[in-house]
Length: 351
Length: 258
Image (cartoon, rainbow over all chains, first blue to last red; front, side, top):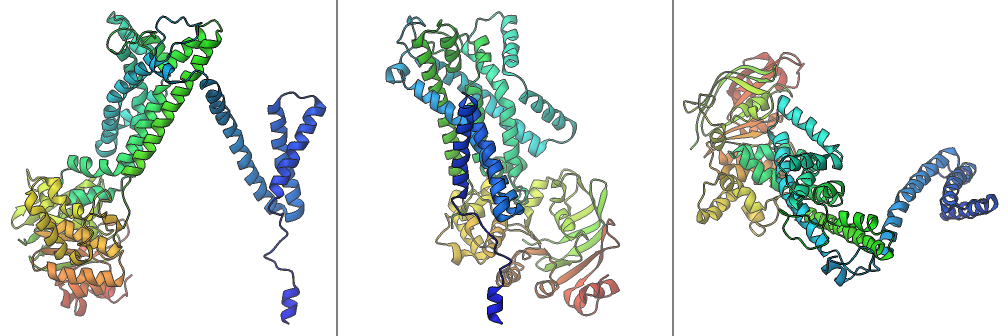
C-alpha cells in the first residue's frame, strides 16, 4: 500500500531546468548573436546586443516550455524580460558615468578646482573651474533660499489648510509650473531684466532657477505631509495644542526627513540647468564672487562654453569633461547627503 | 477638578449627512459613563463633539448645547483649543508621537502649550506616568522612543500624555479594542483609579467591559443604515444590564439584535 504511494509520480514536483540553465542560455544566445552579426556583416555592437537579447528571451521560452511546461515557461519569460529591460536601462547609465570618469580625470586635479580661466585662451591647456564652482554654488544656494521656504509653506497650506477653489487653483498652477521649460523661465526673468535695464548678474539666474525648483519642492513636500498619519494631528489637537503648533512641532518633525530629501533632489535638478544661466548670467572667465553684480560663471554653462567656443581644441574638451565629472559628483554628493539626513531624521523605532 | 457635562438637543453633521440627532444627557462628575451601541450609530461622533474634535474632520458641524459646569462649549467666543485643554481624549489606536521619547511624549501637551516651568516638568511626567501605571515599566528608559513600547504600554503612555495636562474630563474612544486581555485589564483598573480625579466617558464595543468599569451606561442605536444615530436610553449600568426600560436595549445586550 505504502509502496504504491511512493511509486506514484508526485503531482507537486515537475521537471525543472538546472540552476545554471539561464546562464547557459545567455551565453549561447550571445555566442549565436555574435555569429549572426559576423555572418551578416553587421558592424554595430548595439545590433549584436539586441539580437542576443531577443535570442535569450525566445530561447528561454522555447527550452523551458519543452522541459518544464508552458506555465513555468511564461514565468521564465517574465523574469527574463525584466532582466533584459533592467540591463537596457543600466547600459546607458553605466556608459555615461564610465565615459565621463575616463575623460574627466585627465585634467581634474587640485589646480583645476582652485584656479579659473582668467586670461587662458579657450584653445590652450591650463586654467580651471574655480569661478564656475563658486558661481554655481552661489546661484543654486540663493535659488534654494528662495524656493525651499516658499515651496514648503505652499505645500503646508495645500495639505493642512487648503479648501475649495483657491487650493485647487494653486494645485493646478503648480502642475503647470512643473512643465515650464527652463528656457521659458529664463526668458521671463530676462524680460524683467530688460524692462529694468539691468546687466546680467548671478542673482537673476537664481530667480529663474527658483521658478524651476519651486513646483518640485511643493510636490514632494505635499506627498510627505500627506504621509503623516491623521491620528498624530488629532492626538496633538486633543491635548489642546493650537493647529499651527501642531504643524510645527508634530507634523513637520515627523516628515522632515522626506521633505529634506525632496529639497535635495530639487537642488540636484536645477544644478544642471544651462539655458537660464546662459541667458541671465552669461558666464565669466574671471572670478566674480558677488552674485548681485556682474556676469558670473557656472558649471553647466562652463561645460557648454568650453565645448562651443574652443574650435575643437583638445584642451578645452578635456576641461569640459572634467567639469561634467565635477557636476555629476556634486549632484551625487547631494543625493548621498539627502539619504543620510532621511535616515538620521526618520522616526525612531528602537526599543 | 472633575466637571459635569450637560448635553441638550445635540445634532452633529458631516457635511449634509446627519450623523447623530437630538441627543440630551447628563454625565456626572467623578464617574465613568460608558457608551454602547452598534457600529456606525454615532457613539464616537458624539464623544468627539464633547471636546470639539468633531469639527476637525472636514465638513463636521454641530447644533445644540454642551454645558461643561454651566459653560456652553459651543457658545460664542469659545476657543476650541482651550476646550480641548479641559477635555482630554484617548484614541482607539495608540498614537504616541514617533519623533519623541517617552518623556517628551508625556511632556508634549505642556511643552507644546508652552505653559510649564522647567523644574516642574519632570515631576509632572513622573506623576502622570505613575497615574497611568506605567512608571515602573519605563522609568529606566525615559529617553527611548515611545513607539518602541508594546501596544498596551503605548496606550497607557497616551493616557499619561492626556492626564499630564490635568484636564477635567477624559474621553476614551474604544481604548482597549486594539489590546490583548491582560493590557485591557491594566487599562480597566486604571480607569477605576482615574475616576477618583476625572470625569470619564468611554466608548466600547465590549459589553462586559461596560458592565465592569462604568457607573452609568448609555445605549445608542440607529433606525437604519444612513439614518442618524440616536440615544435610546441612559441609566445606571446595573439597571441597563439587568432590567432596561427599552426593549431594543435588552435585545442588543442579550445578542438578539436585528
